[in-house]
Length: 287
Image (cartoon, rainbow, N blue to C red; front, side):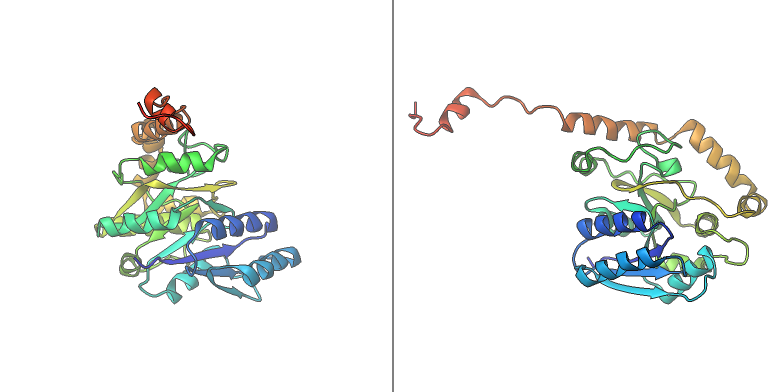
């Protein structure tokens, strides 16, 4: 299966960018197309981080930089339009992808043609935050252990109120059908993604959790000034649905199962049978 294009808007925090690129390099298959798009945000240190990474990456990377900023939502809309009908994974500038993240998101989309967006778990993912919903949790202390637990998760693909900005895979055909981002009403990717998710949902697609993928983040996404008022006026039911989702936490059992799988993963393995243990010793005589 061909993997989707990764879009990574460059932010102003060069340390977060450096960590993001390192995680991306470590946990993304070689040759995957990645587009770093800079809306005039990076400073000299950020430029140095990008240049160093471009010189050594195994990914198929491109970098563009605008001379003047046009705004987060408008910039991402230009990126998405340039990708046509292709499925695209958008990462936050401070995202920290974990092992298998892109393959798992891609397989999630492929399993169900009604899925418009697939969002992974995160420590800072609002409705998909783990282990506690709606909180800024610490980054996983043992990513390898968490990856082991995620691999055992049932693939339920529960529906979400909307996609979340730490990382999201968007079906290109659904995005084009819904008309893309509304850059005239929203300044932030946070609000524009919510609005796009709701329009795609209205056309019959679903916004779901990818049960077996995790992308960490150092902070939560934020709307631009005035964005939440526009969302509330255009989608008055969404605010109440989001609040109910966070209070009732329909993902509670799913979240608890992931926690239990993590706990099981750190339990010591059962002691081997005495015969097997003796038989494996050098010079042991067969009985």
